[in-house]
Image 1 (cartoon, rainbow, N blue to C red):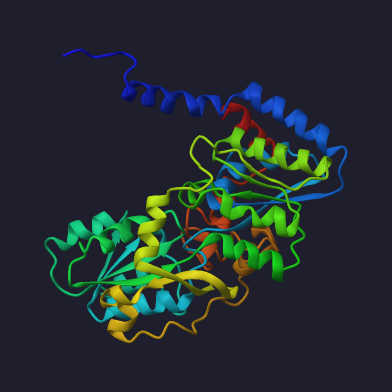
Image 2 (tube, rainbow, N blue to C red):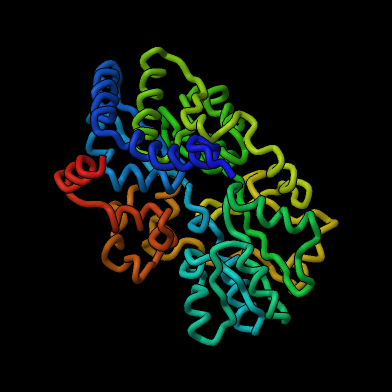
Amino acid sequence: MLIFPHSRINIVMELHTLIPKLYRDKKLATSIVKKIHNLAKNLDYVKIMNFCGTHEYTITYYGIRTLMPKNVELIAGPGCPVCIVPACYIDAAVKLSLEGIRVYTYGDMFRVPGSKMSLLKAKSLGGNVVIVYGFLDVLKDLEKYHKEAVFFAVGFETTQPTLATYLVRNKIPNNLKILVAYRLTPPIMRHILLNYDVDLNGVIAPGHVSSIIGSLPWIFVPNQFNIPTVVAGFEPIDVLLAVYYILKQLVNKEAKLVNEYSRVVRPCGNVLAKRLVFKCMKVVNGTWRGIGLVPRSGLSLREAFKEYDAAMEYGLELKGGIDVRPGCKCHKIIIGKAKPTDCPLFGKVCTPSTPYGPCMVSTEGTCYIWFKYGGSKVDLLRKFSKEI
């Protein structure tokens, strides 16, 4: 048996090793930062929203904000999928777990506060709650658990295809129901631009989501709102390039869609994944925590798959609930109208160990990221230089 040194698997492994190094190269980063500063000299104040929570992590962890010109501001958007789940959904999951029905949930969702309590608190009171890393963990557990169970289906377009695959192929156990809290990302971006005075000059669109839906669904941002938009990856160089492309368009008085993450994202995305999702789910209006009803931003099971609908099975009323707790500014943070440090509870009443608002729970939550990786300008610059 011959083993070729440049076989496909070896090439993939080499790329997996080389790409992070390339996209964290200090000299390349310095060069891009210089170009950003030169472009910014020709512009007034610029505000750029990074949609994804992972982008916010990269920007904060590597201190990218400290490298920006004074007239370029990077703000976080609604890119944390558990932060925007309405409290009424959590309340419903808590109720089911306390009634003895097993509720499967992700680790981040486990700690997000509902109107009265989180699933963590419910579990401490005897609720039947199991943390999973993905839907396959649910199926594995159900091989030995044959009582009533519910999967709390939370997330953006990235997490939806796995569940859809098993639904379409009829491989869901009869004792499992689905509490669908899936949300779609382009509609919330449109909603923010139409209804909130955020005054954006650029948008960094999410890479993970776009690997599924493609880059084209974001074309409405430059076309309809005249805002330069870049689909970007998650390494420091990806983010710096996104800022550079946006500033370059602003200087040239252009508004285009740029796919910086072309190594992963295609214009039409993953066609098979999308086909599977929309074969078992349909687009509906969806509520977002602290924002309210957003047109055509949610998913629900199609009629042929209603037998798996937990809301129908258990008569759940998914409305009401306390989305915004007194003093909390998470609802403003996720639309870019406030920063975590604008909230009087940040780092005091609200910390990762005692989260008061949803943005302090998830590793993709803006408050959590700022609390864990924020710091002085010197500290952040040192971290960026060391890592890159």
